[in-house]
Figure 1: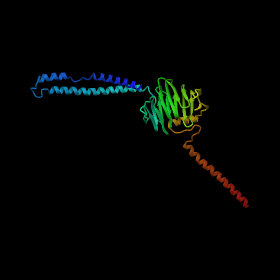
Figure 2: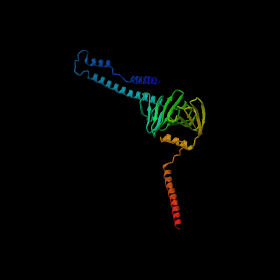
Figure 3: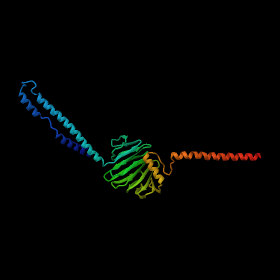
Figure 4: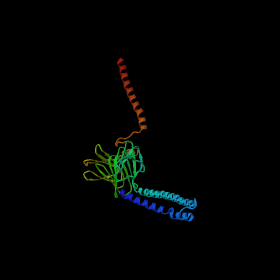
Length: 308
């Protein structure tokens, strides 16, 4: 497919270039010869400088032709670039990124992923600590990938497939276009139009799907299909065992923030911001001080009572 596209673009470029050059007037060598003969006669030049006017006219024609072809070449290249940019609007691209994100493309080398990068079938992308990025799909749907994640992007005429090997991603699939799937070593999540997060723990080999709204179908390694509804969590292990639980608002917000900011978040552990910590710490110290004072007072009272 890539080779085919290059051939098409090459043909377009050749056609554009040939049509442009056709408008540029080439120097007329025959006219130059006729001019020289008319001014100097055939054979030996009988008068010095008799052909200067003819030479100057030919040089002017050559200069004008070079300027014309250079200008037309720039116009043709610009037109081809515009054609390619229009074509790229139908492809998935990186809309934003944060931290260290790398991509491995067809040439086999890793390089830094930048905003505007067009994703191609088979690209492998990984994020570092405190890193994240977002993909804009042609049909308007969005995928964001959190820190310490690795996944492969796959696309054909009917599917988008995101193969998540480790880490966490969030998908907003609101419009119906190509079929959308997130695959992990433990599960395949097929989307019907929804907002959800998929997480794969490579060490434990467990996949977790957090579904905020909509419905998804989850296939395990046994080939069984389970329907997951909004507000639910499903875990799937490598043996195919599944488990469902409730999705709390705190966990959903924490997971979403983690993906957007690149910060780590563990579901089930409510985060405490720095302002809360500052207000709690003095209270904790005061409680200890009061307890110590009570204990000291009781001990002092006991000694006084013995003396009496």
